[in-house]
Length: 180
Image (cartoon, rainbow, N blue to C red; front, side, top):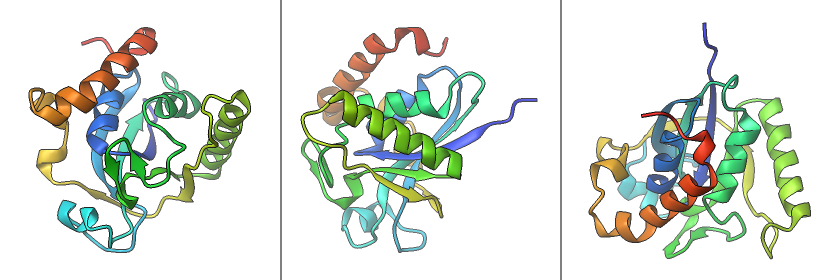
């Protein structure tokens, strides 16, 4: 029997991160939603107001015997810019912050190690500003946000922002892509 783990990560617009994690071997489920804020049961409109404190996140259910949390984080850090507070490209606001909501002390320690390693490797010119906070509550985003890219591949945001990230990801992680 497979024992799955859960990771809750925010790296800007959840449409981008959702799309990429869906393609990784070992990922059982990806759900877009909101976490890290104060307001119960927020809507997309609420979160976009910047008043709820929530970030757009994905909750990833994965098989750690196929994909370790460390490897999941390494992918996470290559598909967004973790050095820009409250922003990813043209998306600006606290809901777009880089955040890891850890589910255990082990996840917290692994995340700290990966962040320290990446900072030492000087992968980016600026230090990583990803928030590392304990997971409390996840609120699923509205249905139309789930698997948005595959449902709307011709939408301009998908073509201009998500498609290039997906192409870069596929090239870098060809050996880690799930078989379709």
